Length: 407
Image (cartoon, rainbow, N blue to C red):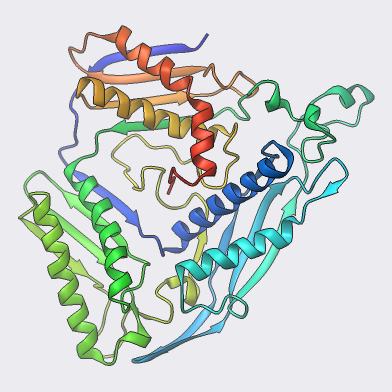
């Protein structure tokens, strides 16, 4: 049975000082996370429909390696392609049937990148580095007795009998998922602002999506520093560039006012040098076009933020197998538990779910919840925990539908 530990010794429900970060949808790290999730979900849906089961895979080591571009007012173009590192592991066959994994991953990536960057020529401006493996984790041996085990045919299943999770779900790793709820005003503001700016960019085509936000709050004042790229094709001159920044500031301040944030300092593109025309001017709207690189797990946590003053795990959830990979499933589970507790009791809480490799997925090793001093209904919290654990299979279904975002 899971070890459930409930502690009512949380001193306060928010920090006196907050510093949080958000890497926008067009940031190379966020792009890598989103691409890894797209590839995993697409592969999962394909194998589930074709073979009746999600075959073993993980794309959590995918990377985007920057190309180069040439930009001037009114014109931007790619010079060297963005390199896409298709890295990870996947089943390339089921029984005797080959799966065209390389072609599928390339096609899905092109669709993804065209969706994110309409100005990108995906046939010319992308270069693919295909580096998938079918090697199993430690545990696979060539001993004769291992023919009856689960590891030998991990990525080469002969039939459904070779797929352990069709019989029982087991944790793949010894790891940790963390969550907290609710979000602070600043955390909600940052998430909402970046989402609204992405909608804003659909109408104001000059705005790129590689938006970076670092925000500070000490209880009395708010301070926000941002990087927002502009797309050269839609910026005629330096006056246009400056005007775009000023209009964006006004829009952001209007969003801040919706959250009751009045005392706020806001800076955008502080590295700009107008005398030298050194500006955040881009061809497609992201630093991925000009040498920057992105890797899965280096960006936002699954709640969309980087919050070093809150509980965090360094686990990169994107691209991990949605059926049994603890670095994804238990991370989502911890956040679901934290949210449910808040909805039921209206108290801030922090939740940790720890796994043990090979243990029943529906029986976590440890679930630990921290609640404010004086909280009394531990039995009720335990009911919430057990109920959310029972819904783990639903997490998988939502992930492969791309209904849960983990970046």
